[in-house]
Amino acid sequence: MQETDVLVIGGGPAGYVAAIRAGQLGRTVTLVNRGGIGGTCLNHGCIPSKALIDAADDVHSIRNAEDRGIEADVAVDFEHLTRWKDRVVRKLTKGVEKLCKANGVTLQQGTAQLVDNHRAEISNDGDIEMVAFDHAIVATGSRAIELPGFSFDDEPILNAKAALDLESVPDELVVIGAGYIGMELSTMFAKLGTDVTIVEMLDAPLPRYSDKLTRPVRKQAKKLGVNFQFGRVAANWEPTSNGRIRITTEPVEDDTDKGDPEQLTADKALIAVGRSPVSDTAGLEALGIERDDKGFVETDNFGRTNVDHVFAAGDVAGEPMLAHEGSSAGVVAAEAIAGTSPDPPRTIPSVVFTDPEIGTVGLTESEARERGYEPTLGEFPFRASGRALTAGKREGFVKLVADAESGTILGGEVVGPEASELIAEISLAVEQELTLSDVASTVHAHPTLSEAIMEAAECTLGHPIHTFDR
Image 1 (tube, rainbow, N blue to C red):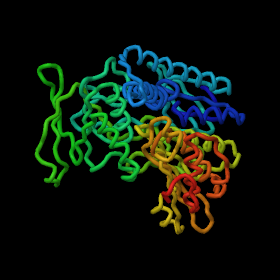
Image 2: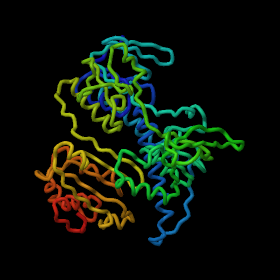
Image 3: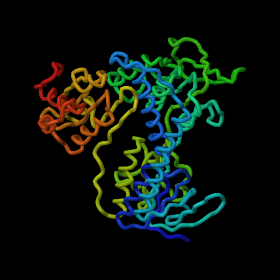
Image 4: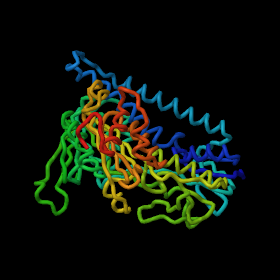
């Protein structure tokens, strides 16, 4: 039987980061992973999707640069593009493997199941091995949710993984769900020439975000030709005689204003209605590890479950189901095991890689009021940013929320060019409790998009330089 200080179950962003950090802290670590190292994010989600999204952005930019005097016909070799995407993934997975080994992590392929307090069974192609551990970190991730009647085993019905592995761009695509995955991939395929229809049971896309944040995204999606069916659900599908599919949509229950059932014809259907935790494969019940009614493992701020020496991190431990949150939680869990008194982060940024991008962090105005603050707000529009105008991207804004009494920055929102990058500065400000004056008095290089954050701070303080908006 193997012996290890720390057993990590799952090799995604939470698991491999936890394993590396535990190795750095002098623990012997065994990481058991049944798929590609890097998990869903690296192999089938974050990285391949951003590779294709970036390529689609290039295609769209070139095709729509006539106002700059640039005219070009662009041909997309999708097979070549996907090979490039796969090379990017392979390079990163090999890099993660090297990092693990360099930090003394033993990598083992297979499925690990806890069998008692300090032993786990590892199975791989019929071979079974036992490993004894002092501590365990469960980082088994999440899986795409299937809709009743829409099985991922059926070739035309796609989850995000299958959509990113298509051999060709579909002519017509129906996307069920207008959350971040649905909106990101809808935008990508639309830019590559696909006719996209999104079916969403709610009345707006990206329901976790405010209407003001999502309005530019919806506006751009419509410009790209994306059609929306709000307040409707996908009821069933059937194949057609010419190899396509016919999807029936219906109004949500008790909403007669949305009309009668309708039929949509497409080549494929992408189901993007969310993800659920993979908490049924690691033998948690053998130790009595508690889960909530959605299957998420319950933990404290350090990732510790109700069984003191077993931790959980990443998607399996609940919202927010974000790769960077999982990595942060993995570090905290490893440091708690090592006894270094980790300091869990106060806030986690969230980003959406739509067009334009969205980034948020910290408290909104209403959340700040609920916490007992008297918030003060400031907003700077990208239409007043020289760098945004030179990039031809004037839509969107930067908004800051601060405590009126102390000036401490409590949160921020960005919708616009490079929002996924810009939110990092606001995240730093929130995490380190910086003030509006700290940001406003920090000289930002010109001309850059990041100046918009400085300008937003000045707007919040009441003395904007480059806009009348306050």
